[in-house]
Image 1 (cartoon, rainbow, N blue to C red):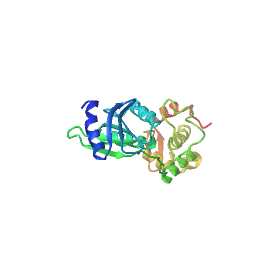
Image 2 (cartoon, rainbow, N blue to C red):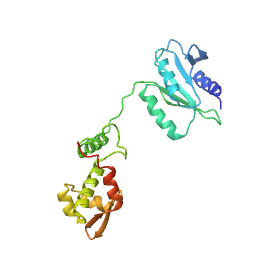
Image 3 (tube, rainbow, N blue to C red):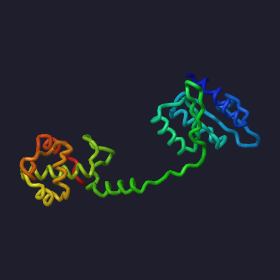
Length: 218
């Protein structure tokens, strides 16, 4: 499919809705008129791109009725770009290659994002769990430090000093209530169970301490 192949099916679709349609009018790829209604502008590209969104946004200086039209992409690509288009107040049209099926996935209009209390709560809990600000600048050289990793590091530091210890003792002295679960899950490969309820530090754990040794809470 070429970009020019998008125009005929989109023109037929708009004409079926009662519009008069013309291509390449001024800066716009497609312009449609119906009576005294505001004009409809459609920008054509084979696929979603930042340039396409920029063009469509520029056309919003002419009319609020702006669509972007592309060849039908895979589902994931459509979903992500559809969300962006909605946030920008743009409509989205796709054309299926094999039969020129035209689908309007959303119309232009104001967008109000839905808030997720669960996501907000999860973010705040992650914020509260972090000790200090270990990720200033975006990331450490070894990756993002999470509250979970900070707890694992606290357990590892305790074991490095005191040797193999029972989970309850690590939890109390390192001030990590979930110490036993963290060492048992062994997500980073830092811990080994040396006896029932007793854990020691592996070589990977010592390397982890060296890697994150400068990432102390500030």
